[in-house]
Figure (tube, rainbow, N blue to C red):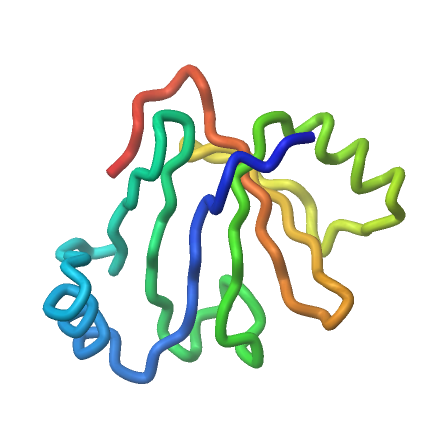
Length: 125
């Protein structure tokens, strides 16, 4: 398994519109779509989603303010590696048009999302 970079950085916000405006105005990161995110492209093989979630969104535990997403290159190898390390999955893997996703937690209980993007599908924006 090889981590290629962050697949996404997600956190909750009390006021998404204010935060979107601040990131646009202060850092030049526009978030003008329904997903409340932008794609930052650090290299040819890695794209990072920067996205906001409402405080009551259930995509990751409400008591966790941030969830990291790491993009990986091979899900099968990743699953084998996690199994060898004794790291359980928090829920079943999910596959969608955006790729394959799995979730684990760190020693302090924070959810971490691991993502393998599809190779045969055009990029989604």
